[in-house]
Length: 368
Picture 1 (cartoon, rainbow, N blue to C red):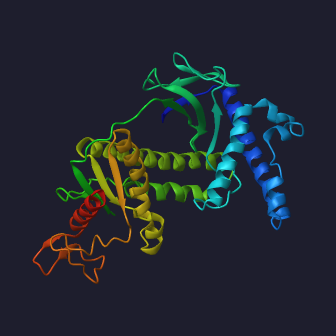
Picture 2: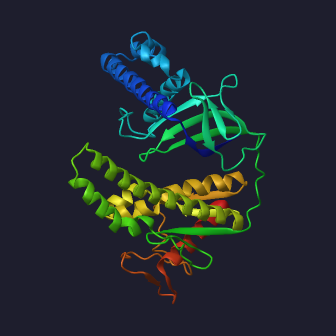
Picture 3: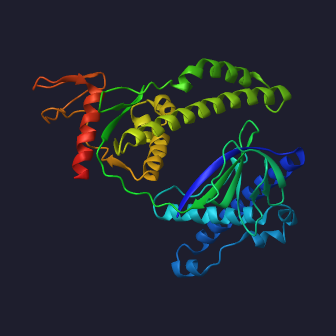
């Protein structure tokens, strides 16, 4: 079985917006309350692990007696808050994430609900949701009939737009393709990546850099407004819309680029880079964040796997830039300012193209 999510725009009424705001608040309240109690319990029994294991963790039902207003919202949304907290704890103890933090009302507002006895259904231009009943939806594409809806996540952006992500389950066993066409991609700061076939850079528009001047102007105006006033709220909305537009442009571009590669190649080889470390160590924070290499690799991976193709990540310490792609000699030093790679064997080639060829060759070695 495989999962696939479909994201659509929601257009709730004023009454439905009020109930959504209540649900977001209740989910955040329950999550924070359970996290606080878990932290207290841990501090109390941290020296006695056996007693800590015997302790029963709080559930959302426990709070409904004390806080009656929790009964007004979808109970499945509260139950999912508990599941999300458990998942956060497991990720922390397995070393995959930091310790769970309290949710802020300034953070992304969302909640998840599950399908139970036909409580969620897609109708003609509407979606039926628990407590909300029929909500208007812009369904820009059809969900295949063999896809079974499992859950839905409703979210609200900073600009006040509502979206719903419909998670579906379906039978899918991709046939593993025979690896014939292989390409290596080297991360490029100003062009997203350079491929090993022709050394071409992706014509990445760098949306954040383009909007930087306009963004600085709008943020400067916002800083001069009295916080909380009507004019401040209007200006805050302008800044939020600019940021949202940049994010949408970037995501659209990355989806299109990651869609092209699986059509042409059976296997894509990339470096397993630590982008956060690169942005801090090399002082390239804005450029690294604008490229969104991590998002691109995520999109590329699921698109390749869905077609039975492969994404190979090679070790980040592999000297792809310092190695000659012709003779294999490794240079001791290579500064960032040297954009052309020159080797004693006579090879003169663009630095990034040379690195992408080495990445491809290392991928082929791992495949073999």
